[in-house]
Length: 255
Ligand code: SF4
Image (cartoon, rainbow, N blue to C red; front, side, top):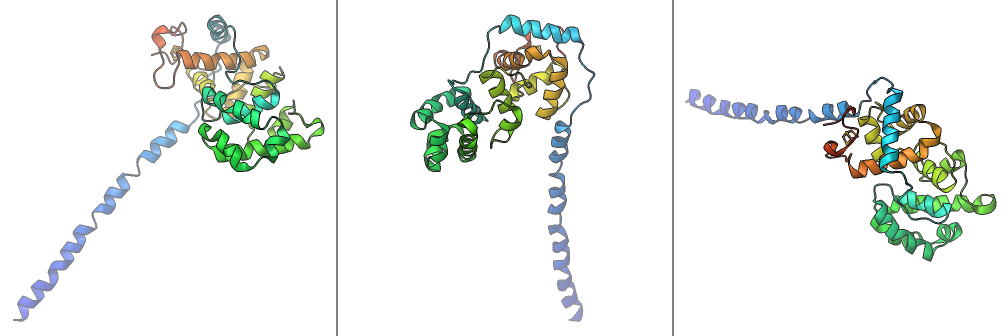
């Protein structure tokens, strides 16, 4: 009688050991994190040869001689706001939204004083509308407090405005005021600069520094516009059309 009772009691222990197995599987799933870190690392590359830089600039000049921003604007204030709205949004979409916004609220003071919900409603389709409305109203409030109530034409003053980083400041200074203060590094310029071997950096500020070293200053504004157009036309993010690109013979990223 005593022996039968002890055998039955041992069984549940074995079952408990089997249930512990899923923990090992969970550890295996963590692997993709390492891959993501590898992608984000900047590469050390040699400075590109000047003749290659000149070839790229000549190509861009030949294919896109007349360039400017695709955003619609009439005054620096409109360009500033359109550029803030263009983050993570197409220029076409921004151009559909800004006429409504500026008709309802023509001046910086009007935008600053508007109910936040109204601004959010007008710009809703550009995405990230809450953050953009906050930036736009904050920037307009600061502008109205400045002497003359105008958009500043200096890099440092522009960078003080909410929602304005170097890319937006460079767009406003270069396009609205004709002041060459840097290179606009958007997603296209970032991608093409890497593919063309102009930079191994991934941080836009460092990419801009590399481009400012190798591009002649008088081409800083125009070359950025041209790179954006080349990115849209042939050198797309997903599948560049290298077979149609005149740079393919020497481009380090040609497929
Ligand atoms: S050759 Fe290809 S990767 Fe290089 S710039 Fe032209 S389209 Fe882009």
